[in-house]
Length: 252
Image (cartoon, rainbow, N blue to C red):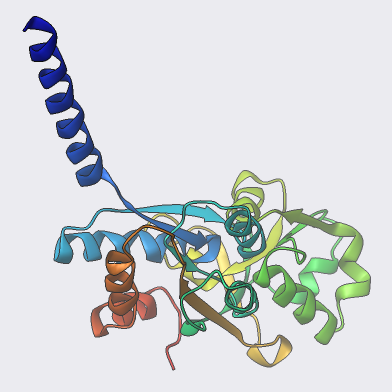
């Protein structure tokens, strides 16, 4: 009888633990580093409205795509371009073709600059390092490289370039003083955490290809995608669009 009682208690405990685990499960959102600060506000608002907890996992769009292909347990992928989510859709890993949720803007940021920052200052001997995100993995790195080439400064400064694995690391290079200048997302310098630090100028938009940022819901075998679909819908709501615009993104 005692053994039967122990077995009964074991199954009750197991069932209760399983229920708690389900309640604590979060929506996992793979997030391109440029949209980190906006996404923190977006997920907070989403959770307040729906009660669905969400966790952000940051990285370059290229590296996050590689992790998704390797089976990383993400529910939604918020990318810095359309290329990577389109790649996931072609590979059968997304529920539908990606949709543009925002258009990003590139800026030149100089933390210690007394006057207005400018491209011509990048050629000064005092500027020894210029930070950009790695073009191999990060769309904003591609945009920075394109802009330097378009504006005619690339050959003069290419040996000064230091590459962050994502916009987050690029920002750290600038904030730490490792780089005297750097290219980052406008959303970064408009965030409450970094607003007012240093000086920045927008990079002319004609100097780089439009940064169309796409989102997809990822296929998850044996798991409901209802919560991911709710977040996807929220991302295109008026409230979410207003938040994105406050961080410098333009909305189609």
